[in-house]
View 1: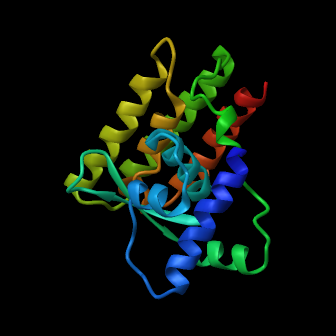
View 2: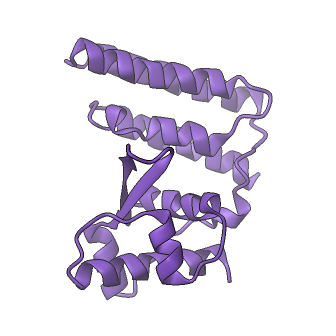
Length: 186
């Protein structure tokens, strides 16, 4: 099966789960058990990250599990399944997480991260929230400078709920995604 078919399988399972009255978030092992997808946890996580990127599922951190994530379908995901209109999906099988960004693309990414820092500093956040948000941006900056940046990990940092509530971050993040996806396509 293709990654797109696997994404649809996951989305249909989350749809059936919610429509059946189960409103709780579920884990990767639950998804694997109920969909028959016998693939690695990392593969399932990449697929759900792609579904989250286009707004079809929502994830939460499961603090009681090391590295655990919890998943649930969104209203957009419900609509997409009901109308057979899942029009946007990213084929995670092609995303190894390693892209060769040009120096120009890296400088554009650095500029976006600096704009994110400015947005954080200009937002009316608590000191703790500001410190946490800045730490995420600084971690992303350090990872970008590594010889072989792991973009899925960088994107997970930047999609943190800590940054989600800061005005202006979402638009900047989309700009960064466009740069990375252009590098992936090239």
